[in-house]
Image (cartoon, rainbow, N blue to C red):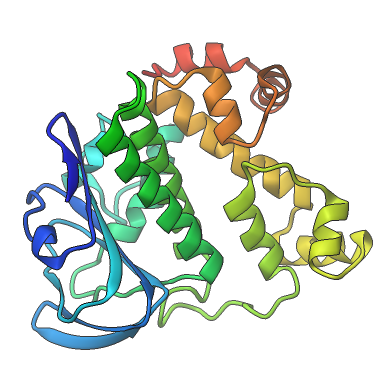
Length: 290
């Protein structure tokens, strides 16, 4: 098990070590490949990867046979120090502040209504690779502590993972028994690519070549699926992550920009100001970023 006594996060690939996670922890159990038997409460189920389970501290979940998985346990207050797990409920009014709405967005994956069964979040192969890489990055930071910013990077990778799972969770058809979505839509793979590669340089020509289409068809199909242009959707992904990292971490603006897909911090600042009407530094101060 990889952990740090000063940071409320642990990661392991062992079922025995999972049992040592503190009772205050929420947990993401990521099944990477194969078929696995699990016990949820008093019932046994067979599940087929790639899937993940988002567990709150009240839920009983056991992996019954050897399988390839990673478990990430964390105190939810590590994401936002003002976050109160006991007060999170789907019946509560939507928070007015951006941070509160974003907390509810990802925390919704961990909340169950009375009598609601825990169900897996079904992942695309690209998503499980994205999450596995982030979990490994967290483990590396916890082990190596390369500089004074390592706790910040752990939190940033955790936030990035939670937001990614939140986007999948709220997408129709990715949770069993939810309203079916349109997984065969021609732009579904494009959307998933953007969700897992937003930190990289992306062009419309590159996407069109990658997905064997032309720019016009790509834009039309993508707008039909999402209601947005490709680059409006990509911008929203990037700005959403940047806003959260500015509020909840002490990463430099340059590091935030890079994680959000902007190699040039000055360009990032211009884009950020265009859509949020203030520069990243001012935004961080106004919202009490760490």
